[in-house]
Length: 242
Image 1 (spheres, helix red, strand yellow):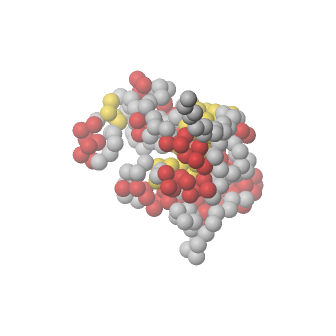
Image 2 (spheres, helix red, strand yellow):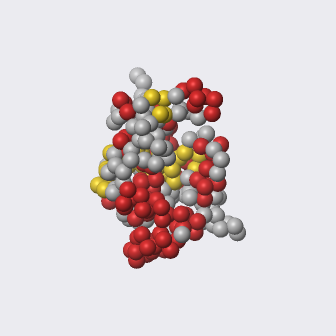
Image 3 (cartoon, one colour):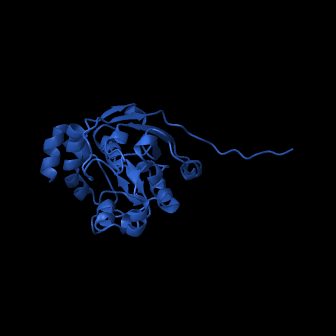
């Protein structure tokens, strides 16, 4: 599989992957389970989607600083291909190349086979403690504050931000990490949801169960555009009362 990865990306990708470094224990994984060699081998199908299916274009990716940072993006598309495409852009276009650690929903590891796979490619359950540890180690985190509210919204709400928490802002202030805003254009159209089958979702233990005209998990071959804004650094100020 790694040979297919290198065939997809050529010598340039081979050189970029050689620059990746991850702390490893005696089992060849980092404290969160990231397996660098497994990740390199698993890149091939994702890279094919990036280049041929979604034909991803990026703008402003040079804004992303080296070291710790929070990529804050809108979320849509029923399945997290938007996260996958941002992650691939960090490997093939960002400087320096890096594995971006996506903060996944707490229920995701309950899905069969998902938990070990996510761990091996560097994705982490989005708890504050996990995020702090990764930022303290200089990692770049990918956060979708809308969560499943954005991911699984119906098509009539396309490109409308859903309610989201401000945990990422508290984290940025505490860890002094810059925030890079990311706008994802295209994912809304990859699997337009006609309605949310909430009763079935509750029975299955899912946050939602969108009904789409597509055959999930195969998305429509829409074009993706990823826009990265300039990094923003915030400082906490204490209120002064007179």
